[in-house]
Length: 480
Image 1: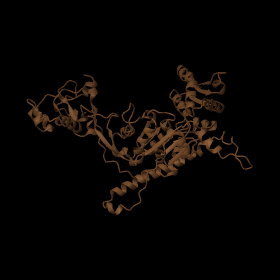
Image 2 (image 1 turned 45 degrees about the vertical axis):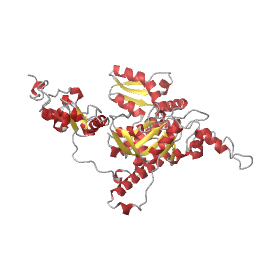
Image 3 (image 1 turned 90 degrees about the horizontal axis):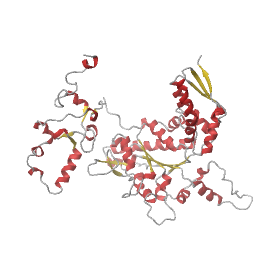
């Protein structure tokens, strides 16, 4: 008998007995046969004949469906388990088939103590939030400052609201000042770091984050995602914990794609209608969403989520918005000594900083939607020096990632400064922001990542500008 067989006891050897009385079954969770939720998420299960388990929600829906038609289940013959307490069905001594090992889910270890309630002491001050963002995001100083203050004030509002509701005498607290919610609208060109900024913020604060694409949203009743699917993603990110999801962040990307269509006579089901349906989420309301799926059906359990304490951040590139801003600013130009030149704002890199609600309304956003996004942040277009810093300075910079990859092969990777400047200049030509940096790096690092593991004597690889310009190869230094 080998060592593996000796470690198996009589109860755990494969093919020995059934699940009845097997202590090893205590390590696995029961799964609802209908909604496929585990016992830790759906609650205690009801054991049915044939080894099936049903959660109370699915069982109740099944009974409601039968009883709505006036069907009396007590008159069914030869089905005694329907006339008794289903929790005692194990007394019927019905053989239970063995559940395949692949379909079993192990129970999670119980936590020694519950996590503390949401506390304002858990949220760092705005200057600390910005300092943490500085380690990952290069530039965009004003945007990081505005977002840090907005997030800090939002979670202070959440804490104040919880404290107010926790007071025993509600009438005494009725006269307190109630802080309104302030959602954020981020405007910036593609590749400027909108999504990356929100992802970094959620990771630093350790709160659930859901990223939704506004282009997939349509009016209710049409093909596409309903508005509630945004909250379903947040609930899934919070492991179906409603209380934790209500303290999360929702980032709706490509918000400019739901602008009101111009010169059209057809129904705008993916534009203005979506803006109108988003109003209730941004303002704060009770929304019923399916748990464990994005589709509503008769057997999907529903959960009620209050969006009043969820921070919504909307972001978009808003193409052609610069032209709208320039046209408004150039209207003030006239003839005279104090007149402004018409081409004054043509080469202004911060033209988006002059954006007003009137410009966004001219773009196609309805005023009710803009009124629920009082904080507007504009991100600058990345310059060549900023792209060089993005390559090497952040904690998870692209260069550091490739250096780490080659370190696993015990090879040192070095980039010359001139090579970094060439990469940044090439990325500026592609006009896709920081996304172009990785595309360029993948293109030129492909041959190196393929050839280096072949020779174990290679010790150092130096990336030169001549190699990037395809006038030579990288400088390779052997070990020793």
